[in-house]
Length: 89
Image (cartoon, rainbow, N blue to C red; front, side, top):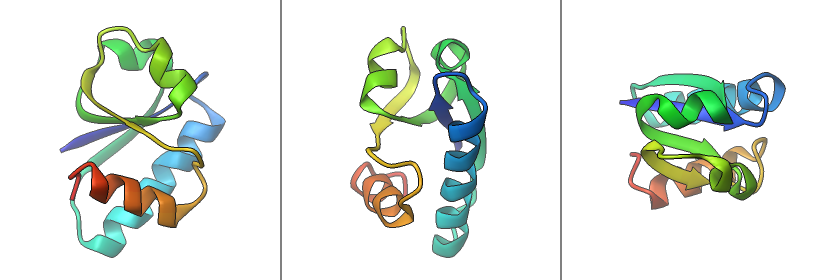
């Protein structure tokens, strides 16, 4: 499984989100490849899931994975809840 953590520029907040997703996956025993990216690069990259904000999700053109919306990239409980609700694990 491949997951993309996506923010506007693909640097700071997507890196934080990637690390938080990896921590949630580790705690849940989920094995996955997690990468971080900017919105324009994520639009063309094949993956299973794209995790981002509502605003950035609206800017994605032809996403090649299921888009999952978060309100807070830092809240690991929200990340865990939303990933479970979207059947990531």
